[in-house]
Image (tube, rainbow, N blue to C red; front, side):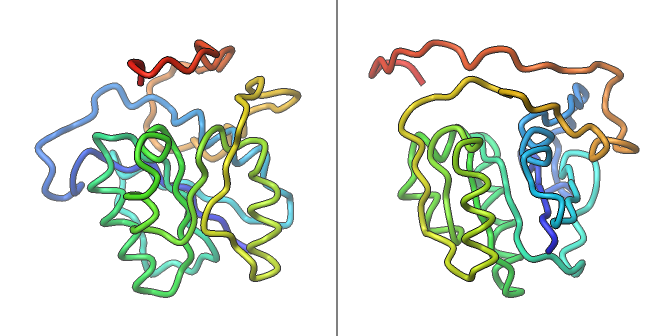
Length: 177
């Protein structure tokens, strides 16, 4: 099977006035690639710097969604779904307004994806992809997982190697995003 990971831009790449000069590796997608079973082929497309090849065959597309990339993430998702490809979305925007996001994809992951990633892929293989996967408790990031950096090769990222060592505060204050 084939998994396509996508980091959306803030707007349509070919029409966007926004150019991301930072071009940092999307570490969260490298972690998900590392958690993906070896029987999956994994590819990454970073909409900030390359065109997305919608006609390339894939079994599932996973899109990380931040609030400022939501509109573009929805456009990308709709294009894949129009072609009959399943789309799963996760990220901070999904945690904030899961009901809205679920209207634009086949499945959402609410919370840190690591604890449910393997189950979601197994459900996909069986043709039983759930509409929603919830992670109740935050997890320790990268527990015995080494980021798959091969998916970043040739993308033009800055020569900075990122490392995740914390997920921030464990309190769930109502005023904090």
